[in-house]
Image (tube, helix red, strand yellow):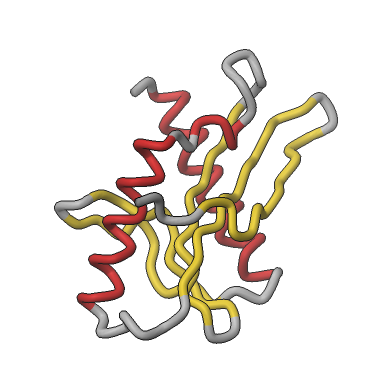
Length: 122
């Protein structure tokens, strides 16, 4: 990964965390890693545990940010989410998967929270 891509990723995660807090989410963990995968942000919104994938792009040459959350990526996030829930004794809590997209435009960054962006696929 290039330095510029890494910096965009760090920027994206920082902005996403701020936007989620402003929207009423309570952050529980960032960059949760386990053998099954990684979740960028784990949060609570009401009674739900929310697993958040953050995607930042400086343009749409390779598709929008949400397009980067592929089926394989969703599976890795879901496995890491199940690990988090089990490790924290939260398997009975309702959970969902959100995606925060950040896209640089000529007028600045466009940021969206996509609630219930995907479900665990069988």
